[in-house]
Length: 472
Image (cartoon, rainbow, N blue to C red; front, side):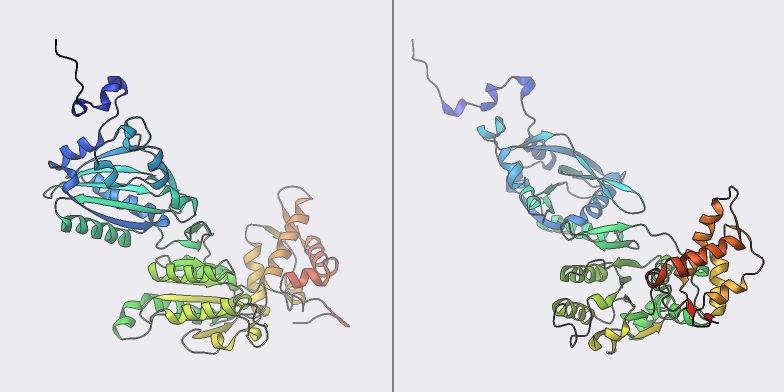
């Protein structure tokens, strides 16, 4: 009898596993889809920032949902090594080793995992964490696309989304990537939204601000119209201005006492210019300036709102260099935007006298400054009318209160009506505001609250003189 012989060439590690535990062969599925050995095909890779994950997903969804296309999405189950380094399309098409058979390496088919990501307006989008797309587009050659994340980069807070595209011709894969990038620009989930930069990987955070209508902006005659001309009207004519070689980049500065309506005006403009992306610069760090301006360029037409700009743009001659680096970054970013980029810088400050001249007194950075004054008698009447809405008011004569609030800010008047309603609520429902409630509210703010309360509400000048209340 011939001795038993063992030929290593006849050994297949799959034979060691029961058939019901045998892993699905992704490489074979890729082979069947492409019709040729996948290891001979070109792979084109493109990297996208983590914040672009929803945009990338929408672009892939558009391809998948096209009824003329056939798209199969396969989930991935990576081995130990690939979980650390990240799976690539090259890993999938490489011949499987014994290690991959027992889960120490290699990639097998698994469940498709999704992450719900915020896309603004209270909506979420299910984004694939990692999957293999077998794409057969009508009239085009078949492709294989791998969407993947690098886990190691994710530990460092710098995770990126990678797209590997395989096709028989390199130009086909490159064109696919270009179309994805085009769709990201056209259907960007961030465009037209209110955003701020996030500390998590330099991404973006959505904000839902209450809409503000024009009737809530109480300013002297003509002032709001002039602000609108520099913001809303200029935006409507951006294309005509661009054709006429007029610059689109511009800067507006609102200055005045606290509580006079600077922030409310910014919110009104954001509500009115729905097509314009709003970037709220909420941090004092240098990184926030760079990323905010970068996103503003990317998402134009846009408006960058910097409240209390004096905190980062104080005169270098007086600040002893504490914020010089941040100030220079702001100046450089504003200068670095070309004039044909439709970005509006909207700045506010309570202390215009301390601003760096290179920002406030140089054309091209701040083109127009508007003072938002404390409300005059007519504006105070309009403010009382505004904040009375929704209340049942039985006050014999509002004129004494309008007169006694000389020097008050809009925020102060809003607080008067809030406190009056609070005192009236103690008398039972329905709430009816009467003269005694108004008097209590005035006394609470002007006398009991003292100087600090008035200062906090931007109305330090309101109150008593040696001869009584300040006159209007």
